[in-house]
Image (cartoon, rainbow, N blue to C red; front, side, top):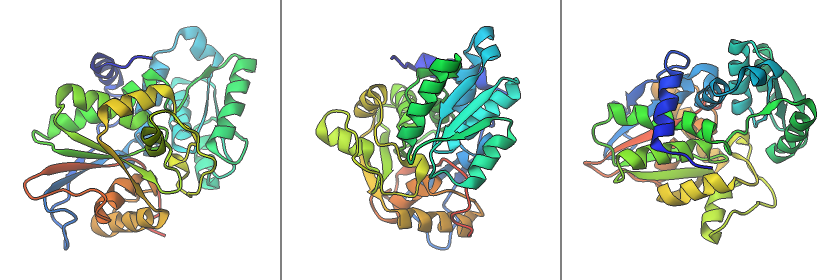
Length: 313
């Protein structure tokens, strides 16, 4: 599976007018600055359907044939990819079936259904739901949209990186949460192609260090268990395509705890009135804990990748 800068630029053209160009917000005006350098927040929590996932799902949908659209689309998700596929299917008027693990919050499942998608719950974690979704697609003839192991999905997610570079003339560090790796793969390919000097740092939960362990081992590994409530960051295994791109483009992966992500979500609500889920606050948690530092004179960007109420309730 290949992914080039040209693929991501084509996705950006394809997505124009179909998803939101989300704001880039300066985080310098605060009671207690989070970093010595100039920090910016890319607010994908304000994206249509609530996360960056709308980019990849819509780009993939726009790449399908008329016959594929007529038959329908299907996916497995911890929640956000399912919302994005439901959004894409709903706006295109095509059938969408979303498989979720039992750990998915009821509220998210209801929101997916509100876009007109069929919701099916299978297994305890994403990997279980993913197996069920693939079997269903094979049996029913639907087009399967993988949340991260798909070049069309990665290209859509990579448009986040293009937008950041278009607005920040100077960028030293970019901090991105990692689930399966589709987002950071797309961003990594786009950013490194245009500005190879930018350091890209990934953030995973302590209870789901899927790609950190894989990089340490030098090969893709499968975690024995998942011990985090951040369901959108919790696959037991990534994919070879994502692993290879991340190995090429990401300088470091750091870990944060669920409580550190929760406190970061509270901080986003207090300081900016932003509602972020745990995954959406992961990049901020890495900065708050010192796992990632932004020195004086440096410019950095933290991606707020998904909305939620973890900082509100």
